[in-house]
Image (cartoon, rainbow, N blue to C red):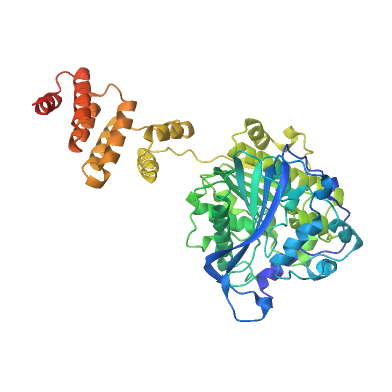
Length: 509
């Protein structure tokens, strides 16, 4: 077994006793929407894959199992709700054991076959398969699972967010050429980041998905991959890290050719596990710096960032399956009631963070920026710190890049929306005039130059020089009528404008 995998297991999965938990006792407060669930398998034809348990040499387009939780206004009978066992059918498929008998699930996969865990399989969830999506536009969350984990590993949290108006989409954490990861390598990182990007394209097919309000959330290894995905996808507007490996494997991210810390300029929140007790660190030969070092967070300068340490949660319990099924490590794990209480708090913080930064909810923002005790949370449950992004001036160059990206269309609307986000934005008259002329005299961008002058005269309606330039622009493209209108406007503002006088004589003859 890879040494890195052994280390991960030692840190996060040493276990000796069994828990007494339930979905009802976690008690996540349902939002106003019924939760729909859909699962299907599609394929990424740009990559190949081998189903190793088929025991042949065939390769196929890389299959992507997709799980989606979505808001609905249907009201099905509670008896029609999915059970935990229904979710385990997804796990079987993703593990490529589709025909495994249900009674073998707990023997075959990661969790002990105890009476308690058998009871969990029968629990009723809050999701319903096949119901109609609600009408409207909904914020989107892409969920990246932990190392070698299923798309449904955090189903209770995904249901909770969907009930509050989010579309949540996920796929399993799996290797590049087959289902097995290599051990948290750079190749694994790139593969899961590409899966996140595939899901963004997939969720774009849903009419109700608002891609202007898109975030990623990753647990463990997924919390490393989702940072890489954000570094190269400006669509991603916020990042949630559920004890993400961005804290433990930052060096792996640094080795990516796409690594660029300056690109992490969106709100970021990290939920950390409790400190590992000294005796466990010694016995399991764990690096003690893992408890406290967080180079990525400390290095952030362009992101409004938050770091919360949950003193009652070990790593495994940032997922639904971990809370329900994971055996407890008697050396360090808290009681089941404490674990469920903190998992619920982590879920609430996730919702508040997303509401604050995707939906501009000021009450949610207040909750996120408060100390936990100000939110009525016991002081011994969470340690909290935050940092503001360094103030950066949004320059004329930055605005021009935005304008260019939309082919210089709708510039007045772009300016107004940008000004709301960057109140200090300045677009000097001379810069606009120069840029407009540069674009104008290049034949394929002449109309773009005119659009710049239209913005400029909107911003500087008393500038005779800009109206003169706009007149020259229309004259250059052969629109003599509009050229005359703008030369006349320039003369109204500055009657001694000799260029406008001469041009009007020329046009009237």
